[in-house]
Length: 607
Image (cartoon, rainbow, N blue to C red; front, side, top):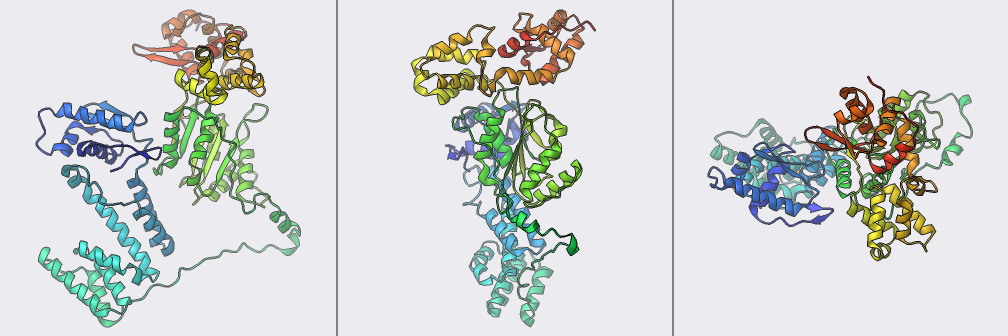
């Protein structure tokens, strides 16, 4: 049992704490009842203080693993959120299944390599530091998976003619598992091919006696057949080298051939390159540890149904920065390359997915100039090209699911990160990760990373004022830092004073291409007229938060319609749900409120 956070081992003290952790990990994200945990910890004789001791072990586990892993109390049990967790046992099972498929297809070299990678994850005895109650319940199927992978790898090695290499390991395995007939048959085969026919027959007789003495049965038909072939000298040798299939394209009529085609292909900038299209990572990226762990958990996970993550939040929340930072953090795990595209055009309008697919296909198919004309055909070609590869795709600034869906890989080992101002919850297999405002501490760390720690430490009160006036918006903090860089003689107090007046605050949060108002304008344009009018009326209402009945009174409409409008604004990330007790309360962030007050919208009409 071992746990690592960001690659660093964390202390797990005590067999019972390890037992509780193992029970959660083996539950695959299901709730583990108090009774089940008690059975794993104490068997059928739990102590009188069982509930209190369980709580103590859970508290120790929370303390050891830190805030990135959440354990919550559910009805008469506990639940551990495993979405940010990578389990080596899951990686082993995925590789073992892949190796077995390769073996059945006769791809012995690939099968041997894949199964060897799976078995390298085994170190020592599994569950050796937990209670015997848990080990007795869970160890048999873990051990069965390891032995099956060993048998499949040995079968691949024998098919490749490596009988001398596997002989020492097979001898030890048969001694450890004398009733395992498949291993005994493989040992007999290896001995026979090493010209040790007598030893092979002796191994068979030993196995026959073990089976008769321990189980009262005779060897199975497969082992008896190997025995017969060893006796008669008819045991077949390795199948020989794997067949290599080469497929040549259909010949084209020579007159239609373009004499400059090969030269153009050789000049293609993508020829012999692995796509690495990620933009620059932000060297001062700070914070978002929990969301980063969620995204990396999806990208590194082995759940086949998962495709990746959608990062969603209002304009300026740092969605693109987090997506690119996460992509760089795990790009070595995608050896076939990384694709990136900004799905918002220079004019602010969404790009056509047909155009986006053309960009990707030119990178994936160097020298190919005749791309399919329709969106469906390009999507099919794109997914066919990605099949069997492990590639990371970053789709930045997606407008909606219709634009995004054609750009998702068909499945397999490819993963995708999507950023959008909308949740895109209709995308199958994508985990939605919401980015809210940075907290004061995170905002201060980001301001320090961008403008210099010494400057923030020299003016702590002014730095706190800047953070508060920027409303936790990373884009706003970057604008302030850019102004300080352009005018190094300015102090943080001067920046805070310039931000303080509400009428000119959004003007201060604009420099170069960074503009807090522009992102809000794009979000407002995506609203219907009624929702936009409601936002303006609520922004002028002078209240920090709105419930359904309060919003209905201000807007002059029914409560049902007011709640629908508030929900639309919340989905567009223009209001935040801050309380969900007796009923949700909606709050307009300060910068959104200032922007909405600038707009010439009327309130919502009755209806």
